[in-house]
Length: 363
Ligand code: FES
Ligand SMILES: [Fe+2]
Image 1 (cartoon, rainbow, N blue to C red):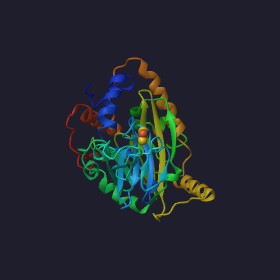
Image 2 (tube, protein in one colour; image 1 turned 90 degrees about the vertical axis):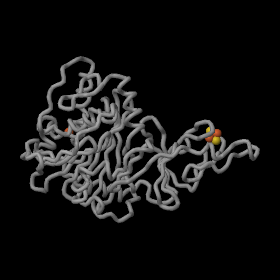
Image 3 (tube, rainbow, N blue to C red; image 1 turned 90 degrees about the horizontal axis):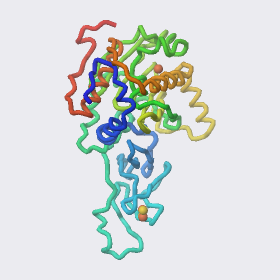
């Protein structure tokens, strides 16, 4: 079903298992998916298990410093190879000890005659992996366009905000589960229309809905902004399918959404700030200190419970039928996401990059 990008999404998009299956295939298994930040795998040998869509994937910092992503399922009988962050030169299956190098090449098969297994035919499938300003994305689609192309519309604004000079703090990432379709969670994170109604005491007094504006964007990536009381404007980048990041003065806070099933998703939060020093706090006291700094960097009370409540309430309405209403100008990023869905699910070529200044839109 091709969506009307100028309207809200219909309820079927939030409850239909067939649409969810198509999204897994075309989006989560067919497009770039954010997995973590580069500081989570800083040293050669670091291995981090992640799940993309339904596929277990192992993210690896190879001996030469490159990032690699391979299937995390053994090419023998499919056992999960690595189940927690670890560091090793090789990957050895815990079942029958088939062993792979850090690029997924099968090296040894114990207790089998030399020619019993053609090793070159049983390597781990490898996936695309790229990092962009310290954000790591993986794609199972070997033809996916490079991230530099994908994120062209937002690149100049991000460069201006100095993300490369900040330190990502993967040790502070947190995950929670919401009882709503993944699209409800990411759309909510993208748009600033709801601030005045959903966050009257948390976000609205600091960054009001009426100060929100569109900067530049397309189906591939969108930048929006807004005024902040007593500080520089915020810049919000929406990178579909599942990543939203917000620059406030000197800090970058992000939310990443991942589907669990048609009516549930996982929300991960993380942040970057301060000087990129290459080291991160290991001790508990250092970690506690970092949290204090992070809290003051946002300077905000916890507004996520308010987002969770409204997204879950919206999901409860997905059981019924309604005629989708029109989007208003401050929701333009929602239209960009509609174009993203039509592009990835149905091959509809999305419109060119839209820039608010070019279009003569006023704040
Ligand atoms: S399942 Fe991995 S070695 Fe047998
Ligand atoms: Fe919100």
